[in-house]
Length: 213
Length: 120
Image 1 (cartoon, one colour):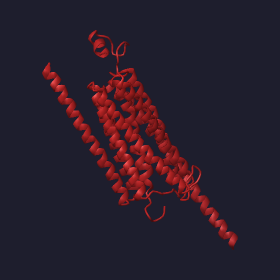
Image 2 (cartoon, helix red, strand yellow):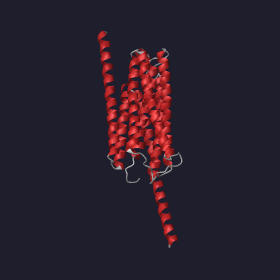
Image 3 (cartoon, helix red, strand yellow):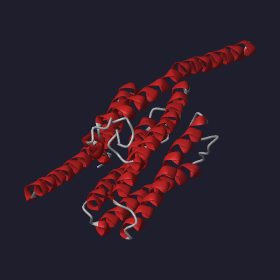
Image 4 (cartoon, helix red, strand yellow):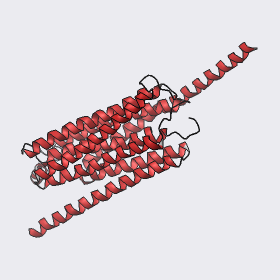
C-alpha cells in the first residue's frame, strides 16, 4: 500500500517513505535472518564435508533398514508439515483464523513427530557407542560433526514448533494478522529446506555399502 | 468487481493446486534419492546426483512455499546472488582437505616402513 502511495505521488523508490522491496519490515527482517542462518548451516555442512573428504576412514553406520527408512519418514514429516504450513497461511489470508490455527497445530504435529523420531535415532546411535569424541566404526570426528549438525537443525525445529504455537495462540485471539503467520511460515520452510541438504549429505552418503568403508 | 474477486479466488485455488504438485514432486525426488542409496550407486556419481537433486528441491521450496517467485525482483536480487556467492566462497577450504588426506596417508606409509625396518 505504501509502495503504491509513494509511487503515485512520484516519490523516488529509494528516497524513503516507501517500501523498495515491496515487503514489510517484519518479512524483510525474517528474510535477512534466513540468509544469515543459511550461512551458519552452510559453514557446518562445509565443515562436515571437509572432514569427511580429509578422512580415509569415515564411518558409514547407516543401513537402509531401519536407519534410512526412519530418516525418510522424518523427511516425509517435514515435507508434509511444509504443506500444512502453506494451508495455514492460505486460510489466514482468507480471514479463517480458526482454520489457520488448526493447520498450524498440524504443522506443529509434523515437527514434533520429526523431533521424536530424531531423538530416538540419537538414542540408538549413543547406545551403539557413538559420542561426540568417538565411535566404534571409524574416524572419531564423525560423532562431533554429526551431533553438531543434526543437533543445530533439531534446535531449529524445536524453536520453530514453539514459534508456531505462539502464532496459533495469537491468531486465535486476533492478536496477529495473516502476515504474522506468513513470516512464521518462512522460518518453517527454511528449516525444511536445510533438512533437504542434511538428509542426503549426512545420511544417504553414509549408507553402509556392505564392503567396508 | 465480482469478476475481479472471482478471478482472485480462481488464482488462489490454482496456486494451492500448484503447492500440492510441488509437495508431490518433493516427495518423489526424496524417494529417488533413497533409491539411489539403495542400489548403491558409485560414491562420486551419488554425490553429484544428490547435490543436484537437493538444489532442485531447495529451488522448489524457496520459489513456491516461500513465495519468492512472487516477490519483487529487487528483493530477490538483493538476497539470492549474495547468499549464493558467499556459499560458493566456502569452497575455498576444500583443497586443504586433500592436503590433509595426503599428509595422513604419508604418515601411515612412513609408520609402516619404520615398523618393517624395526622388524628386520
